[in-house]
Structures are given as structure tokens and as C-alpha cells.
Amino acid sequence: MKVLSVASEIQPLVKTGGLADVAGALPAALGPLGVEMRTLVPGYPAVLAAAKGGRKARAYADLFGGGAAVVEAQAAGLSLLVLDAPHLFDRPGGLYGNGADWPDNWRRFAALARAAADIAADGAPAWRPDVLHAHDWQAALAPAYLRYGAAPRFPSVVTIHNLAFQGHFPASIFPELGLPPQAMSVDGVEYYGGVGFLKAGLQAAGAITTVSPTYAREIRTPAFGMGLDGLLNLRGESVVGILNGIDTEAWNPAADPYLAAAFSARTLGARARNRRTVEERFGLEPGGEPIACVISRLTWQKGMDVLAGEFDRLLGAGLRLAILGSGDRALEGALLAGAARHRGRAGIVVGYDEELAHLMQGGCDAILLPSRFEPCGLTQLYALRYGCVPVVARTGGLADTVIDANEAAVSAGAATGLMFTPGNGDALADACGRMVELHGDRRAWAAMQRQGMRADVSWGRSAARYADLYRSLVSKG
Image 1 (cartoon, rainbow, N blue to C red):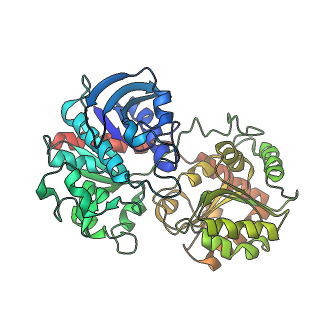
Image 2: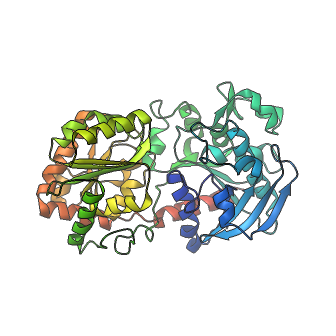
Image 3: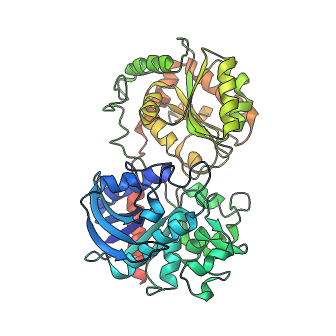
């Protein structure tokens, strides 16, 4: 079984979020299951540098405004197909913009989708995939190109990593997409008077997956459907939720080079050294009170406004805070001001630091995830693996991966974290109060840590579900 995966970012080469982790980890997880996956990614400078010496598989004299080529390469243990299109991807700044979105993002990712559809239909050149797997809006136009092109029945999957990002552009771009006139219709790419990249993929794909079962149900409601719940309900049984996993080798507390001290479920005491290092990095006064960390984009979706609003109450409830993240400038300022008010009990690092994120998971007692919605979330999976107890909003993948420490679950030794109602400051404060109380019972706390560390957060079961899905699509022809 050969699968062409199409993604706008891939770990460890380029990353802005969890999509890159999934795109980077899934090929290795599928290999033992008889699935050979190659990933088509944009030729950003970092990707081209890693793919140096690759072989040209196909060329375009003019792909959305300039010459381009698809280059086959091996890099960082990945089998890649790199879309080398300098006019689209060779630029400084972020992957999707530089302060604001690049105005030609529609053109950049239409080109990625066009190349994906060409590879699916014709091969690259000696390798011909059986299935196309497109990730998020940046790749979602690929099934539409297949539908209206030379391979209308080609098996395809679109995975929604976050429905909030849809790739909605004005109708004026349609003539430049190279699609036939009939595609600009309600059952094609038209979306609220414009062109919807994700909508087009959801309409055309043979199957739709989301990254958790609960999110798959949530997005079929008006509250979470972001305007696409009607279409998703029409697709019915084609929509399935498959939980993300994590790379358990890269995230292994027993052999993590970023920790001050390695540890396992049997040697939890070794976490104390990591805890002291966290205190030093964030300017926290040493003490026995639990350290709760936040490792997140600082946005409304992630509930950071709720955290900022409850900052003083949480610090008064007997915990300390270590925050790593960036995002909305107003939220950054509110959290920085909160840390300044509670110097020695709260600290914040604005930005992202992979090494520091590992250290925080290995040294903090708990992690706060107050998201309003969370398609899957990987942070809580890392936390479970590292004995950093998740305190999470009851939504999406958070609800699917954490077992709340209610009295029955604690008594049965099944609890792995704490849950609360999303978007509610009182609920967040109450959950943190419960966390502080539980932390005071060392025996119960250690049992909860060990139970979380025993959880299967690998790609094993989920990769098997993807392999079964691919085979079912091929068998349908």
C-alpha cells in the first residue's frame, strides 16, 4: 500500500504546531503495517537545505506564476517529495506569513494541491500512490483537483486538524485555479460566495478524519462546526475520529537529553532535579507548592484569556505558574503583568523553546490546558508520558485522553488528570484547587502520575486505524 501524504509542515524540518508532529510521525508508525508513505511538502528554505542532493521527479514550466519542480529526497528519516517553487516558498518569515498572512497563500497552497493531484494521477515517476492523504486546508484542494481532473475516483482522505482554519478566499481567485467552471458550485469549491479550500476537500474526499472521536462529534454541531457542520452531517459515516499519537522515542523521560535528570514511573523521585531547574529558569522561589505549567499558543481558542482573568485567584490557591508561549499580544501582556505581580511565584517565557518544553513536562507537577475547543492536543499526551498531571477542559481530544480524578476514579487507581468545563473561570479555579489538594496526598498523586505514564499514547492503535481506512478506500475502487 502506497500513500501520498500532503502537508504544509513536517517535524523535524519545519513546524508551527501539532500538524507537523503528526505529518512527521505517521510514516514511521505506518511502515510496520505494510504502508509506504511519502510526504509532499513545500520547498521552504529549511526543507530544501535538508533535501539537498535529491532527484527531480517532475517539472513545471509555469506553476502558478513560475517554474517549479518536485524533488524526491530522504531527510531526517523521512521519504519526501519537495515542491521546489522559489516564487512561492523561498521567502523570509513564517510559513504562512510575516506578521500577517502572505497575500498569495491561496496561490502557494493551490500549487501544493495541484502537484499532489498530478502525482496521484501520474506517479512521481516510478512511484505511484494508491491513496492521497491531505492534511488541513493547505492540502485540501488536492481531492478537488482529482475530482474535476483525470482521476475523479482516486481514493483520498482529508484530515481536519483544526476546523477553525479553512482557507477561505474571494471568488476572484477561481479563474486562476485551473478548475472547470462547474467546480464553482455549492457542491464544489464555492463557499459563502468565495472559494473554500477545506470545504472543497471535504466535499470531494472519499473519507474525512479528525484527530479525536469527540472532536468528530463536536464539529457536526453548530457550536463547533464553524459553518461546515451542515456539510459534515451530510457526509455522515464518512467522518471518523482517529486520535493522534506521539513519538514515544522523542518524548521518553527515561532517555530525554533535554532533562536535567532522566526518570521513569519507578524513579519519580528523580523529577525533583528537573523541578529545581524549572524553578531556576522561571525565577520561582523554591518550595513545596505544586508548579503548574502552561505550554501553549496564547490565544482565545486555548482559553488564555480565562487563565489571565483568574491569574491572581490561582496564585492565591497554593500553586505556582511557569508559562511558555506566544500569540495574541494583549494576552501576552496580561500574563506578563500577572507574573510581575507575583514575582517569585510565577514566571513567563514569551516564545517557543523545544528544549524548555521538555524540561517543563519533566519537572512541573501539572499542566493547565483551558482550551475552549481542542481537536486533539498533543501537549497533554506528552504530559501523561512525563508524569506531569494534566488539568484540562472537557472538550475534544482532551476529553478522550484524560481520566478525571473524581472520587471513584481515584479510589480505583484509574485517574490520570483533572477536568473542568471549558471557558469558565470558576471551573478552572475549582479544578486547580482540587489539584492542589490532591498534590498534598503524595501517595494518591504518585499513583495518578504512574497511571498516566502507563497510558498508551503511541501511534500504534491509531496507525492501524489509518491503515484499515486506506485499504477500505482502495477496495471500494
